[in-house]
Amino acid sequence: MKWYKVQALIYREGRIFRNAKYRAVLFLYFPITTIIIWGLFSSSVQGRALETGMLVLIVNVFWNFGQLAQSSTNMAMMDDSFSGSLKHIFVSGVSSTEYILARIITSSLLSAVVVVLLIGLSVYAFQATILLANFSLVVILTCLTLIASIGLSVFVAGMILALGKEYGFLSWSSIQIFVLLSAPFYSISVFPEIIQPVAWVMPFTNIFEGIRQLISAGFVDPTLIVNGAIISVAYLAVSFPFYTAVFRHAKKNGNLVKMGS
Image (tube, rainbow, N blue to C red; front, side):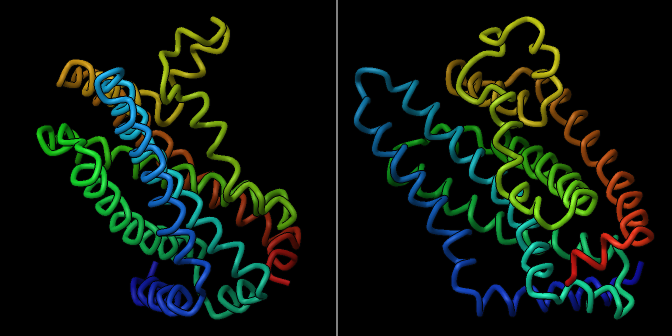
């Protein structure tokens, strides 16, 4: 892998982001308006259900961050596919790892800026001061969310390569089922017993559980952090070999050419 190729792709992505106005909507409009909506909800229930309001608001911060970090990576890939530039990128000698790594770095940097804005908005507009009071825990949970989201983005990239560009909708829709099974606002005990083991290995389950514990008790059980780290890294560790294997297969059977045409 050659880093100058990764840097060139990041530079290219930056120029595309600057010129493609819809990218600003993806990265800023929807996350910020979502936090405002739930922030106003949180403010409206103060005195009646403050803890519930804070829970909804803060979970949405992490939900938006994770969704943005995952979907923006895969949607950038689909942009390259539909524009026909994907084929030219790989013909130029860029490897599969260099390509996906450049997408991940760009999306992570932009998502990091957005999550800072969302946290700041939550703290100063909607009094979510618990985020500042437990800043180190918030940073840890944010990092775990990012790692899990990167793992998902690489896995989804592999799925799209395997299934074809007509399954590009997975770039923005796939995370929903993972969030659903990660129990964002509720305990996994609400699931049928047969689903609960699946829920415990979802990428965000321990993160959401940690957020709920932080809001209700003011601390996070270290076990949740350790388990969250193990699962997040596991997703990342499994997704890259899967993506690489699928890429090689797509190159052999012609799916890669179809993706770029």
